[in-house]
Length: 463
Image 1 (cartoon, helix red, strand yellow):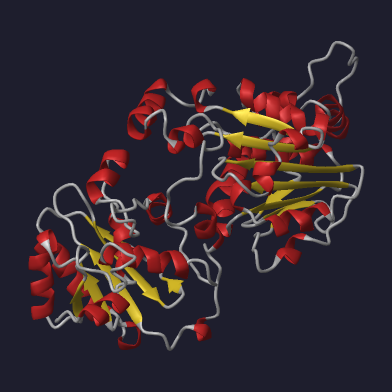
Image 2 (cartoon, one colour):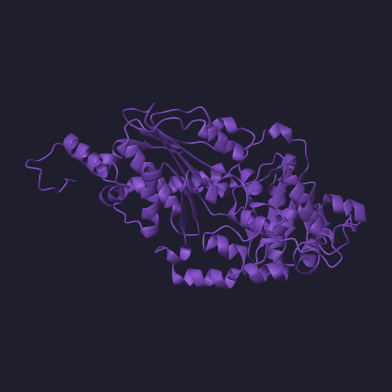
């Protein structure tokens, strides 16, 4: 590609053309999008893209589908291509978020890039390197872990950028480590997130007292050219305009009040892909939780071994529940003896009653999980299902390892606590959940069943 500028009297060499393009786009990342990446950001994205170089520290709260990950990708490539020997550190509240969102976006932008830029960089699984200066001109991922905030510290360079995705779920200690590295004049910070929490570093960065430190920017799904009116109307009908979900997911604003969710979003996010040492739990029994369904709902099986949740969550959608039974029996028989569950908890009422009996006939170690039975701590907790969720809410505060599974994340963190008339802890009923989200919490309930053990022992149920 040649720069079409009248003042150029002669044909430029490749090196001269590259230098001219760098000069043209150095302070204009929007021009970089058009000339080099061949994309056209919308007005909201343009404001964020330009703000980084005007303010240095930028914090962006965003609704769903507004293209905040593309903003991050654009700025990462712009910084790499226009700042010689630049160093970029990309992090999020979980490694899965980076690999599942930012990295595919970076790859798409790289594929679409002008060859003279594209050919300078090598894109790998978790880093980008300049082919001729691999040690000091790069972008790389670093996972934010609360127990290891030092992993984000100690980096120093003249041209450096930190990109924090899903910043609302990143612990405050991580930001303290990051700011310890931002010591040079041309060091920048970009934070982006759905605004899910009314506390923490990201929340504070959007308060009035921080306006002189951060460019406080906002991306609204209604104003985004990438979000259809049909999608907005769907979310409005699904969540209700007065709900926290609509406030966060559509308007891109912080919730009006703390959500009634039993499991905090940030706690779940911080437990994803923690990679615990297998020897820490290899002697712990394996438990399976099986939520049976028929019709349009899915039957779901979740496996847990102590503080580790297996990533291979199984889902079947059969109208005939006996077909699901066949899949479970096959899965159990094909599982090596050392990996077989000691117990498989099944919701053995309603739709699950027949499948439970059939699996028992096949000599599977099935145990009934009866959600509406009395809880052990019946003075404080409404029923067994509420007790499973309460147990899970305590368990998730520890050193755990969760899979990067979107259904599990959404269903576990969206289940609400609804106090009973006598003040006991109670999870909302399935009809209320379905009314809000238009589907059953099959994955969340299957996971909750793996915390059924204590309840069953105390209420003396038979198998």
